[in-house]
Length: 584
Image (cartoon, rainbow, N blue to C red; front, side, top):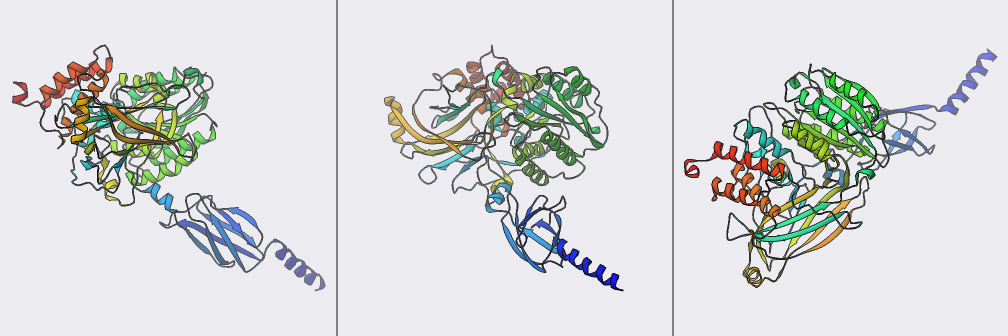
């Protein structure tokens, strides 16, 4: 009996030493989603714990009552009083800043303005965001406006695909700014150590003689090839059954093989595939082992469903496992966008990628295919992944994106880049930003704001405003005097740096007639008319296809392959869309 009491006594002491109570619980967000990796600070013992993958935790406690402080990036810091013998369900609220980040974002914005009508279009099983064109804005009432510098080029090659098939183009597939910026027009290498060069030009509007065009050009510094940082690339390749067509998986295999031939020994490539199931097809491999990488790509075959969500998670894990500090860490997703297993909606994918971008890994999306092509999904992924998006309609486009414009596609020089303008109402009666049209759901959300994005090495972004001039403006035009048309601020941050930098620029410009501006600016006006005509824009309904053709011929540089091909594409559009009056 004495031995039993001694055993009981020491057992009690041991329990006191290791904790009389076991505090258990879970941490979730307001949508009941588990929150892993939340930091839990226990006040009584001044110790720190981390929540598990399901947001759960278990903590030995010495006291019946205690206080916990829970912190997690993007959520409000929370302190709770707990009874340690009871199950705890702790809810964290998103911070105001995080709520803003998760709202639909605008790619252009005029302060305090709201937009009007929406239209809906469908193209087979393809999906496109419903876009609302920017309207005319009175500068005296709303002088401040802005646009994102994260301009993709996918729309141009997708439009080309429709026209090459003699098929009408869905208006929402035409993103005017992407057609203009496909050609990298009027690019100027910044001087010295400057990261950006900014330029503005004012001319007359060729499709409306009562208006002017204001060009705003932003050119990002081009990194010398010998100074390009090492790359950690994860090819995330869709090998599901829907990819078993010549213009899908075979095209992607050829595209990635072109890319691999330019790898350096300091670069690393991994391959994750998804089709029926997700697997790491090629573990991280040095760029020096080109034959091994090329062989792995060649052996890919298409079959199975499309578990895109889980594949994205695995690809990011692989990228993080080989993360290069100061290097380029990027997942390259190649797909027709037709996810049919796991999270498939744009909103769910938006949340998934928004969480993954915090890792410092960028995302590039390469779209292929037709009929079931999901343009809206790939747009969502690229924007939320702090990356870019291209559509590959043929091997020539693949070579342009993955070889010729390699640094523009994969090497960012800045993040969160956007341009803000404040128009001078003395010279501008009203204005309209051409392109940079917002998604319907972004406009419908009252909490949205302007979303900047990454801008690649050697990239140029051109924005064009239609200007209704004042009488004072026209007087200075006639006298060839300087017009102080706007103040501009370029905001950006360096890669993975939260500090916002700003470059101020005075848009003081002398009016130059459209036939006297440099040919690249004139060609940009031709591409703009082409895009607005395809969109059936309500702001472009007077000039005919024949006018667009003659204007384009007078401005295009036919020694430039891309501009020459544009003229061929224009002829195809005219045959498809041109009415009898135009043909006469």
